[in-house]
Image (cartoon, rainbow, N blue to C red; front, side, top):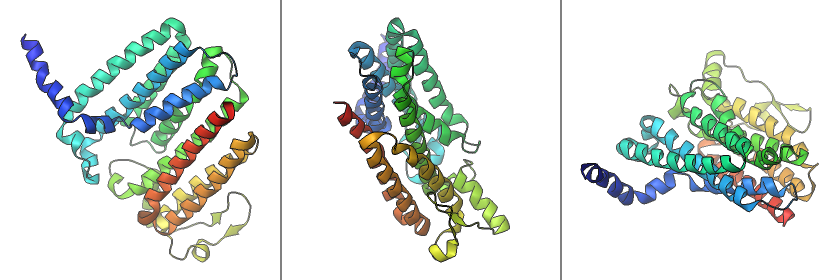
Length: 314
């Protein structure tokens, strides 16, 4: 009875903060993972094993939520600088909620294991990789890579289940890897002042180097070999974030060429990626003004990519 009574404050805490806890899961990321798993099976154009698909999709949805929540808990003190105080003020509640999500995720993975052990292990490895994100903030680029890899790997679920990977699945994984990696760079640009001393991100490190040697290289167009002086193209640019822009533009520029090999939806994505580079150029001029727009545009490109492939497979 005492144990049950001790759980009551936690239960009422969940109920009172249910909306904030729900948004802490980043439910849109869970929806993205859910749809990506379904798409990974549809790419094979075989009869769909719906029990396996639904269990795997739900597993990815919950493990994505688990990754988001543990990161909020781990970064709760630094996030207060951004005005995010819920995790800091409700640390024990967040931790309890994370444990419940973990139990549900583990239960689903056990169910997947009974159908396909290798698919269950695949999900588990992605889950562990995602959780490791919260503990490698001092290692340059590693956090960006973890998010990008975890964000793209669900598209390979069908291949893991069937024991073979389609070339198209690998192409889509590469495109998602590039777009999500660039989105993380944009997010780091937004947090560059807050992350200083807490994370070693590309914008933070390159800003420190530029301040020390005051050196800026030329901008390289990702589609051509012509080089233009930065000051001539962007007279009002922020030199501290240029290296971040340069890296992001090159990644998107090179990867976008793959899109042209993937049919109609790939062609549309190609122009979407050109749009990302245009948005990055606006961020270069006025980072604090255009950064939110750039993030939303990249999110739109990811959604457009997933939905256009779905439409193509219906």
